[in-house]
Length: 391
Ligand SMILES: [Zn+2]
Image 1 (cartoon, protein in one colour):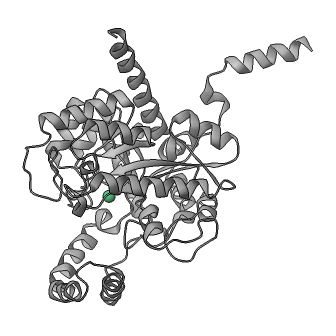
Image 2 (tube, helix red, strand yellow; image 1 turned 45 degrees about the horizontal axis):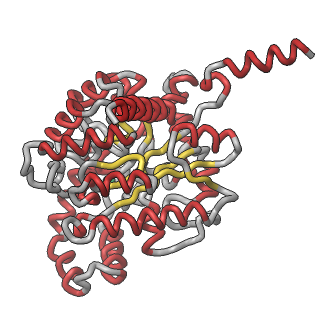
Image 3 (tube, protein in one colour; image 1 turned 135 degrees about the vertical axis):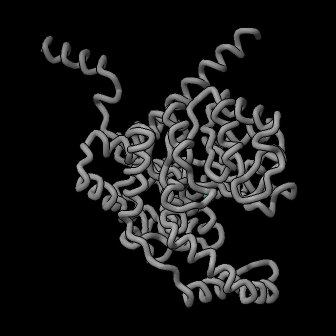
């Protein structure tokens, strides 16, 4: 009996990581936008879209960050209200399915939920314009559950330049730096997916905690400003951050990127005609656009391209610097063999085929991200201690 008690005490003293199994994390899915526009049963295996809870389970995925995506058209025009609306929808997407998922807002939440046999859903804001240039709104969004924020979306906002818009600030403005520091203090991850290269470097030199890319790939394979070049990858390694690879074929392959650009040019007037028919870009526009795109397909890329990106990031930045950021339901096409979240184990298998150890695979599939998130939490606690000391 005494032996048993001694063992129990010994087990309690073990570091958490030694007792708990590794978790798999995907840091970006746009399922809430899809759900908001076309509500569906998340508890059923759907044939449309990329994500629902049965498919999440089949894919062996323990934790997903749902994107509270705020379209650029709301910038300076109701962005915060829209952000609250989509975050509320995410809470409903979780609360309505207690048999499948639990809501999480910390690394310890994720570990506890997974240990209890459930899957975790977290919230990340997509588009820094959501805070309407207000640190009070940023704090309110944190309290409502947001645990990361992309500093920009496709638009340059009032304090940060985007990778896909005109640069107006040469990176981050002084207020943009304040946003980064307040995110550090709150314990919100700084997400540099979508920002310009200069904003990336400004964020990395400003942030007191590691930063991350929730859904960006390697530019060496596709010369797209949404992807990260080798110098940026090395900077992430030095910062102990993580790059979570996006599955969008346009970001994975230069051949697809070029074909997509050429197609956009070719179909420009046809798309303009569709917009004229449905200026609000509603249901009619969306349906017709999809038909047009389906009739003009892009070259296909295999899911192994995702692993090529992982390989490259490992080579340039090390095994600690890479993770998974699918962008499911946010991308019009997926690679062949990665049609939805249920296919995630294929990545694991391909990593195994390429000689990665089980420990390395665990890091890539989620533990690298968990390390960064835990460090962000630690820095937040430190900053709040210092902040409170003077009160
Ligand atoms: Zn995005």
